Image (cartoon, rainbow, N blue to C red; front, side):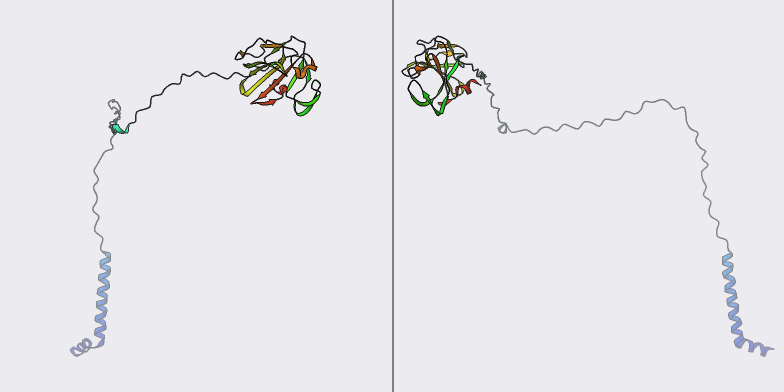
Amino acid sequence: MEHRIKNLLSGPGFYGALALCILAVGVGGYFLLLREEPPAETAVLQPDVQAASPVTDLPEHEPAAEETPPAAAAEEPEEVPAAAVMPEAPVVPDDTPVAADEPMVVVSPLQGEVAAVFSVDALLYDETMDDWRTHDGLDIAAAAGDAVLAASAGTVLSVTDDALMGTTVVIGHGGGYETTYASLQADPPVAEGESVSAGQVIGAVGATAAAEAAQGPHLHFAVTKDGAAVDPETFLEQ
């Protein structure tokens, strides 16, 4: 019996059984560990706070006034050096009166039939001189003594007795215009340097123009602008 036990312990079967036992113990211990309950979690105690009931009886109070931020301190202006300030020049009012230019009023110097027209580009036959020549004015036939009027306001520049054109009055106007009234009766009622208005009588129809004697009593009316002859009819149409 003892010999058989020794053979069993010393044989390979013994080690196999021992290994099985160790395995069984290990498995049993594993499952034993799994069966252990985890430690109970510590309960967190919550304070027993009762819900506060709404407060309705609050004392009346004024809403807090919004605080106004203090005004920013005004920045002090920088001092300008006295030398940098230029004194203003005094304004001197101009009291010179300004007179508006009156519009030029033009009237016909005489009502009558046209005996000779203005022509400086073509020659006209002159019965008195029996030749062909230019004519720088407008001849208006009328009865001797009919009043001759200033065609526009101006100043009498001259009163002369011309050898060819007879008694002649020349008036200066604005804008460089001058008007000439020839073949008048002697001694017209105006003098050199006198101011006249439009329509003022400055003479009477006569027959004093020797160069136009064949036409009888008439007015030789001529107009110039800056010294150049202008058609009288164009001037009268202004």
